[in-house]
Amino acid sequence: MTALAPTLQAYFTTRLVSELGVSVHTLAAYRDTWRLLLRFIAATRRTSPQDLDLADLGADVINGFLTYLETDRHNVVTTRNARLAAIHSFYAFAAYAHPEHGATISQILAIPAKRHPRTDVTYLTTTQVSALLGAPDRTTRAGRRDHALIQLAVTAGLRVSELTALRTSDIHLGAGPHVACQGKGRKKRITPLGRQTVAVLREFAATIPAGGFLFPTRTGTQMSTDAVAARLALHAQRAATHCPSISASAITPHVLRHTAAMRLLTAGIDTTVIALWLGHESVETTQIYLHADITTKEKALARTTPTGTRPGRYTITDDTLLAFLDSL
Image (tube, rainbow, N blue to C red; front, side, top):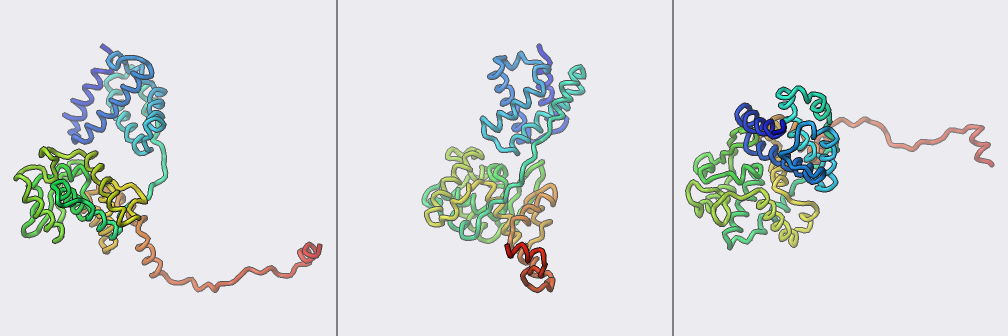
């Protein structure tokens, strides 16, 4: 047996699960990275993954895989960098288990993440939110579910994984209404709910069995993130007939999270509170919304002191040499 297979198995079972205790989302992301990598090598080198050794996965192979992600799979740079981070994590573990492959491992660990321009935050305006909320057909069970999900997403700012994992026991609609969820990094947080959101959830949750998923599929199972994205795209297409501006950019579940953040920012809420609301690890992550909000910048400009400079045009003083050239 080669060294790669047992080392990879020990990495996932011992390092990630037993020692680090990573979340199921991190485990799935790292697993998918290695699935893609091993299938890429099997296709390009016609070698079975179980026959590969650590020496077969040199820096040139990893760089070829990263290029494949961008060119063939059309992954964005952030996805490419996330895959590279998963590969780096494994090789940092393998460096201690197999020092004899130190040269190969150090070359792979030296592969840098690719720099990329920061993308603009996409969010919905009040008019667009109203159009999107009005798109689901609330005469159907799926339409009522989607309406409630969108309402909670744009007001509470939950991630799509947090939304799909919610159960009826996670929402509290009595005194001090709130929703409790476990977010990124297994951090638990409680988010308050407004009266309109409470009314929507109370009506919808009454049709869901106690203890079941709050936003279930037709069979009562948990919705996948892809299913939420597909339903949202469908409703965005319908909403565009009444609000054409909503079709200017793709409406994803994360756009709803951005919308919740921008609603808080335009209401004058401090970014530290927004960071707690969204479950951000650092307040610096929340700063992207300040860059996106032109209203905040305009208010800041209005509070500055004018420079006192008078407008005017630059005029050229008389010069004998310039006068000679002009006369030619």
